[in-house]
Image 1: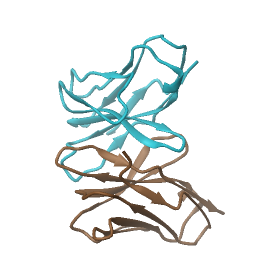
Image 2: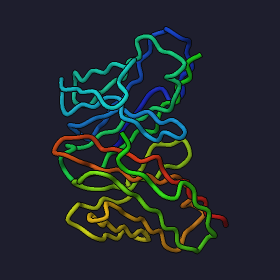
Image 3: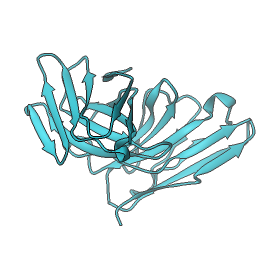
Image 4: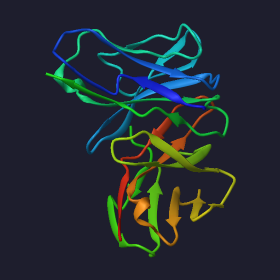
Length: 114
Length: 111
């Protein structure tokens, strides 16, 4: 089944403790992206990747890192999480964003930083 | 920056009625897409309309696009309780740019 898989689904951590949220897609998509969703703010893009080893900042990249060493994986890294990073995070992929094709979303990771 | 903005923010209707949701945007687009999100879950793509198209249908969904007014509407006909969800419009601009989402519309369909 074609899908985007995020792990974990829920994560509670403390300020400053490094964490990684994994994202994997099995559709051979070139484009992958991370969003965060907050009440009243909608979805905001954190980082995106057009292909392997090509990443770029979205609208709210501060406090986050990503890597794209393989086509299928696009982990989101919080080196030193803070409470304002408490949010619902989504990974998404697309064949190529320049094509007229939709984004495929993972089921989300709900992160709480205390 | 917010490109697409949906209207209304919330909509409550009776089962069987039609639901109309609007999206306005600011700059030229390549395409506009509508997504649905059930509570706390990932977004699911509903329909994509290209900038050179004016109307598209998919089952009970009808989307229109008016590039002169920079607006789009999503019509769900004969709504069902299962249509209760948040709906987002997203605009794709530029050759390789990102997809920018609006803040969403909360639709409640009462049985």
